[in-house]
Length: 516
Image (cartoon, rainbow, N blue to C red):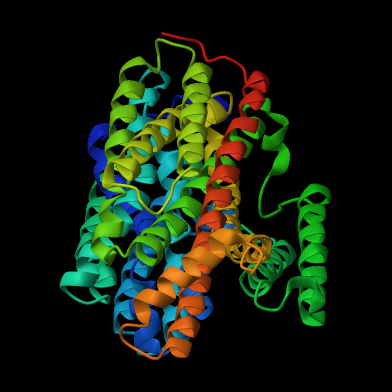
């Protein structure tokens, strides 16, 4: 039997339906921590006496640290054995979670989150590769539906759970709850998971040091520019220009080294596969929209509508129910219909729901949030699970670890860019709309004069007329700021919708799966 036959015909001795239990437990707690802190950010910022922008590093440092580790997963798996590295990743993530809950300042919190990202970075690509390898092709639709449930539901459940814990306990417990589940996942992984021959420990493995350094410099400088650029007025600040230049050069050097050298950090030859290339682009867009929308929707509900942390997080629950509905549908029919149709339908639902969010106002009810969230969840589930199957369907088992590592690296970058850029979009769009609207607050506008006089008359019952007139002007300007901010949220959601719709034609590049 040839080496290639061993790679493609290997089957685990333990039932994959049992093996998937610790795998999905590890996946769930890792993905959960990407969003569980969203609604608790104001509380953490207050505890650390940090600004809102500084507190955003708590989210983005986690994603970037994971992104740095993901391309090296294949090398770590060869050095340690994939099962051993998976367990080490879970334990490092668990220990870092405990350190996050014990943090007393923003610097230590960011350090702990970076360590948590390093630990969690190997969990997702290894889990995806193990599931794809362990299940036969005819069962991968159901298996990837379960995997997709963890990947999609965890970031949706995160704000709900984080809001409840923050309101009823204290924010450190959003990290402490990972500790028992991480320990259970590590113990079960040791007992139930086994390595195929090509994923066991190998001797004489060398790491691409240059590639790893280039990758680290690229991602760290990129995230620094994305997080600090808005406050520094972007390229009007010299240090932003220099940092951006370093990031671009490091990016070019990284990909050049991966193409021209042997024994590199990642194998880019998988991009020759059309299914993989097109499927990865679509997943990056979906991931960016998912994390960006999860970052700004709780902010909209708390700052504009006065929701509590728990209530704003609870509004994500319909999205979770929608995703579960879609998962069941995908599990039942993914091997019976053309999965490209499911992806196109899911992207359409996702884009349409985002456009509906782009028509909100400040007089909406809970149903105006719940229904589009449910539709968005359905779209997320219909699109994500089939596209993961399609993107990996034409690859060999031996390519899975490398391919899933690259894919998750790009998805992490998409999540970080989406989270960072959406904050800039809100600030810039609010400024643009404020400039456009402030011209209407003048003495030549009869509507403004009527509103100013009526407000001043109401306030004059409690204070001097001149003070009442000043307070009325201040009140109207506050309403203008609120409306400008509302329009910024509306613009952001509309951009999400357009992004989802314009990637649908990429499905024409993907080969249809053989149906069973």
